[in-house]
Image (cartoon, rainbow over all chains, first blue to last red; front, side):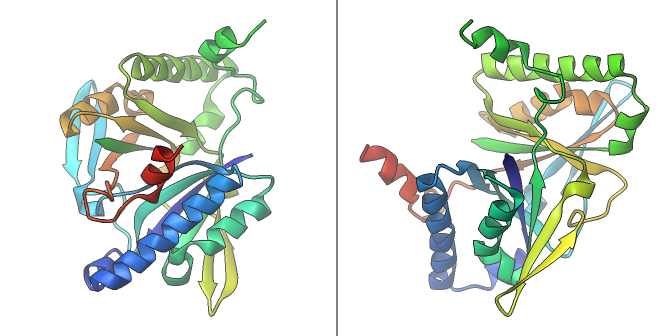
Length: 131
Length: 132
């Protein structure tokens, strides 16, 4: 089962942090990356640039509108994500509890869709599969 | 440069679609993902289960506090994402415009992914790769 962990935290905290503290926190994330990779759970991970760097795109009547800033203004901001392959939701929650942001912000855990199981296989993947 | 595209739309829309219409939407995403792959822009892309299946976790004094549901209750919900490799923001915006979620009246949020190396924090993943 694959899960998306989205990490929410007050990004102003980073601005007020000393370089040493920032390095310690980033190193804690690298340690999670390495552990998850060793366990074969890590699919992908990434930190995001500050929320004010976001652009939001909408198409209305074929016209594109682009606005600055994130979709939703929140007290805590989306700052990064992990895509993990886990045995169960409990394992995903264990990974979530290891995130430094779990102590200062929150981590949202959501399972990915299995489109193949839902009857919508990707034809390109089907074609690539040996007969 | 990597960009994350967050696909945000009214998830209740899916309930009102016939099976045939759902098939058409899925086909549109498959076509879109194929275009991304052919352009070597595709890094990853996934759909998420409904926002009601979300769990939030916080540690309070080292103890887990779990809450059901998404972090933010919004009129439109996060339903999926793509991570794309693009040369600049303009290319990422062009891809966002082509995304089926945009045509369906949803919203796409585009945000650059951090390059920690450039920011002066060595990425141990790279040294692990290099030693292989």
